[in-house]
Image (cartoon, rainbow, N blue to C red; front, side, top):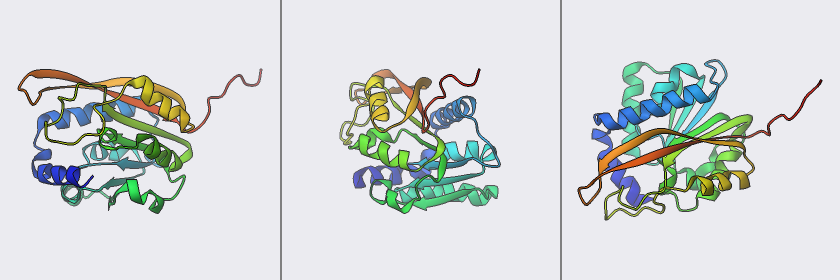
Length: 221
């Protein structure tokens, strides 16, 4: 992912001044708050591929702690500046490639593992889903936001992308095979942008939430 890191390091300085990216993060954070029960005293979060930490910053007041992880140092510098300027105390920043260094994070450490627009950059998606599941607490939840299947025009023509988005059924199957439960999909945001041919297009995003625990069936009468 070195070429991907180079791309995001170059884009880092101007990332937070792009209003469409902030609107997307605001929509994602709002969906997370609506669909997942957060507790400011107990909920520990892993923000995988956090970028400049837009979603982490929006959720920080509703959770106990956030571990914000990314392999692009330029992105993390922007997040660290925001943490210092805002006097934020509950976000820990870690520069690491979780694809190779997930073993450095303790199993069962997080009540919520989340990412935004990361999975389509990863070649072996099933493998990373298994690693993320390992990091979930017994009652933990996985929340991933990414592109619905698209025609390959979302990114620049010369940028290597392993996946042009995902079919929801295919993605849900990978979550099931990893041992996750109660898989549900939402559409938190639709990106409107010109593709590399200069044609305006719409690219919907999916949010998938899955539980690390089986649903309770029946109960005492």
